[in-house]
Image (cartoon, rainbow over all chains, first blue to last red; front, top):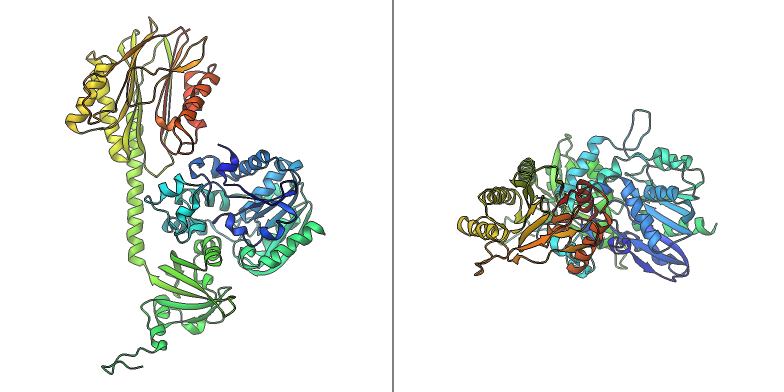
Length: 266
Length: 374
């Protein structure tokens, strides 16, 4: 199976233009970028995808071992770049996919020209050494419980329809909550990979010029964490957006677009 | 407004305050603007402590806040509403209120989002029951896995004249184990070995138990001298008579390790692969009949014979190895031949493991590889 099919890759804009690759974070799917990518479609070749188990991806490609660490997701990003022969990539990653992009750029530095890290965090748990990630192990267990009690349109009756027709999303359009519809087991695996990861050591190895886009009031990636990421990255710019929540791409798309544009042209 | 009986207060104010659910209005950033009396009663928070100072997400547990930021809030932004989200609210006394929550974004005349209206239903009992169901399912899954493991853990035949490898990978489709099995046993010590791979319809505890019965039945029938075609016929009769394992598929082969010949038969099962030491891999397409007790008048189950060469490898497997919804079966069959051929240099154990691990397996996968001494 090709990575393009597996990850439901969608491409817009001029094939000869510089590629801009958008990666959604833990929770929903590529629709998270719907207010952002069209703003860049005139200048860039837009590439969007879904992580395995989300959106229109092929959930049958889910492999618990592969996807239990961020390496599995990083591998997928690199495979997508390889198959589409993307070079000089502007990578825009939200939440955990910010770290996934940083890992991908460290593995294949030549492929990536710029990284835009929206709400990044290299470590979500607090530790004894004084690092404040914002969460305790108990919080993560609570999240796993929430995932288990929120099937979001996923039941054994619907699963075959959804899983068997990744290329026919219209079958699921009448379902509410469909943007964040996932097999609870896949969601739990991604949640563990995300919230129990520790990539603090990886930051200083990232060779790519990066933009840290931080929201002023973000419960998932607090300001102190964004500042930490900025300090650790060898070559980064830091922009604090006046936005509440973890998803400025949805709650403050204009400011998000402006900050990215400024970074790319400035 | 007072109703005809002079008692009922149907004013908008009372409809809001005494609604049979907690009701709150928040700003887009979650800041609480208004709550009703039912919400105060459900949570123990007085409105004076909430309005203008707390946000909806401040009333959630740590895990609930992550869920809010990663699922709830994005959904609300993207589709303008969320429905029946299970989330725990923290009461004023620190205890949890398991709740089901609906929310809609309210827009002004120009269509710009202005506020969020949220209703909160007490789901304590419902959640408890769900948790009981989830843990019951988890237990059944564990028991089925354990049963399946113990059934597959029995000793397999070993000998100087051949090398055997097996692999079993539970599927990721759904949460229950399937009913695939493999087996290898001596029919005549150091002379003839029986190998089998089968696949029972269904999943879970029932499928694991059925698998155990068919596995034992095959051993019992083989030990009394049934040859492949007749063995499958007798197994089908067993299936029909005791209503166990109907529509199960089985590939059974009897390998003479001294003469290096095999006789085999398949009941509705994908064909065995034969890899010659000095030739290519091919399917053994003969000896075919329908699945066990397939409600067809089928008295004669054919078998076929093959001369093998020294060092030849026989591979039996279940359909999880070749079937995928996104491509024709033919592609899966061709791919398997190519993979077996590619792995000709590796030992059977590694061959079986590699084949099983290389496929993305939504379904269970079972592989048995037997290689004759060169």
